[in-house]
Length: 260
Image: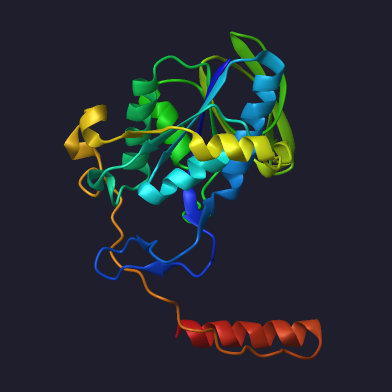
């Protein structure tokens, strides 16, 4: 089974800084890690490879430092790492990012399965995985919590819902986004760490991918961040006392006062 895992390098800290001029994340000087949900995607790919054989290619889009995320994935057991890196890709929103990653996946050739984490911890949009499937015109199953059965042509999955789960069967190739309930990521072995240190990381730029320049980076991003600000701190509230009818009347009067 030829599996592609899409990962993202994100800031480790929750204290994210924003460039006031471009309204984009400032990553300089901030320690970066693999997006936590993507760790489950890597682990599930490894488990599928152990069951069915094949190859795992890990791909990420980001600055040169994102190479470290690829090496970590290789240390866990992935076979290859691909970095999509070019200044032309800077400022991409989820649509432009998914378009660019889809172009890189086409460059890799045939595949059976793409696995992504359900969302990134820095954006929380959960849109890139579905966007990739749209650009590649393949089926997608989101919020996957278990792979029940798999053949070379189909896959049977449990998809997590708010109050339970549903069983879905999809033809391959397909794209999955996985949740943390699906597995427990492994710790890299010493042998894996040594292999990752010397592994070759292939870089794709705009020139290699030959993408439409009007659909990448800020130019190709229909979503624009107009303004970013820190909300004012909330003031202390008040506790309403008395019997329920009395409290209800106080609450109504307060709401009316706010509206007026």
